[in-house]
Amino acid sequence: MAMIKKSQKLSNVCYDIRGPVMVAAEKLEREGHQIIKLNTGNPAPFGFQAPAGMKENIITHIDRAQGYVDSKGIASARQVVLEDFQAKGFQGLDLDDIYLGNGVSELISMVTTALLDRGDEVLIPSPDYPLWTAAVTLAGGTAVHYRCDEQAGWLPDLAAVEKQITPRTVGLVIINPNNPTGAVYPREIIEGFIDLARRHELILFSDEIYDRIIYTEDPHWSPAVLADDLVTVTFNGLSKVFLSAGFRAGWMAVSGPKKGTEDFREGLNILSNMRLCGNVFSQLAVEAGLSQGLDNIRQLLQPGGRLREQRDIIYQGISQIPGVTCVEPKGALYLFPRLDRQKFNISNDEKFVLDFLNSEKILLVHGRGFNWAEPDHFRIVFLPPAEQLHRVVSSMTSFLANYRQD
Image (tube, rainbow, N blue to C red; front, side, top):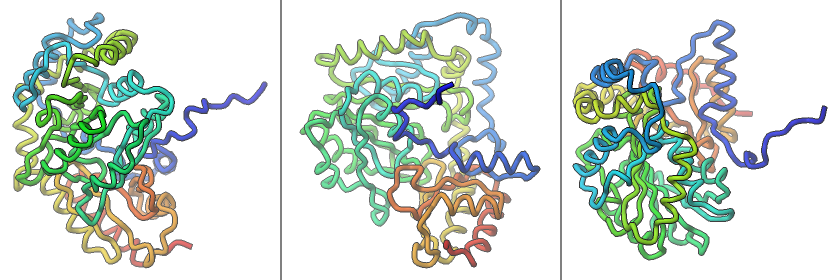
């Protein structure tokens, strides 16, 4: 029998958050080792619970989940999403602009498939959440990474971004708060992106899944709120703010002018209809989440709250390790530290995380898994409880004391 190969469309696609290092961790688990998994922003394994009202709403109305629903989602759930966007200051939205999906991941794939022709370019931050690069690539487009500046708190250089715009550029991705860096963009950065989009006629894609996970007094700015004249697709969902990643409940709003976007919207509707509908169980949680679930995350973020405490423990601890530097994350659930390349002779960040895994039984993700060019960064999730994070800092301190790559 001839060898069966994967599609060439996957040649430049990676998702190393669940890649070879994860496979190595699973092998260690099968051998009886306990692994602290700091590779994914999955709250449930670390004792976080979705708000009770969300779970109760699913149980109470479970009979409603036995059949297909509208391909864009249950009308009552979409209405609550619409009202949440409106409360944030979005203008001109109606129910037809709201789509519910099986997590934001599905909706990102839907949007890129509906929009892109072969060779179309989309500007994506580096480092990025790698699904964006993968989705653009699989849709036939070309991901063009604009570099965020670590020395400037991981903010992008807007002048450098503009130099990367070509006649084939159709869209610009903003991940704010950012995964993996934890950066929260100030208003002037968002307005700079808006200016670029206006002058170059680009669609803005705003990934805001962490918009309510911010550890400072800095407000979160949505481009759609500041520029209702631009076509903007804004993504959000239950997984992070509402601590329910497994529910796979995401949504998006297509805002801005209706005229001139009819064909694009038709494409979204075709793709939405093709998958019949999103998971109905999770849609039953949306209304309760947005109406009842925000107090939970607020308590976790305030001084003394669990997430705030855990962020401080890992940030302060990692920053004190000789040869490791880190920008303090203002939002999201991650740190993106840098290793001194000369001190550790670092040339392969994936080898570093594998070496650390095999030695300390702690799972990280290497920086190049987030489309970061240099082999000297890694991402840490700070969802584990405080005692585990103290262990992580202690383990990394002792491990790095004598570590050098060959």
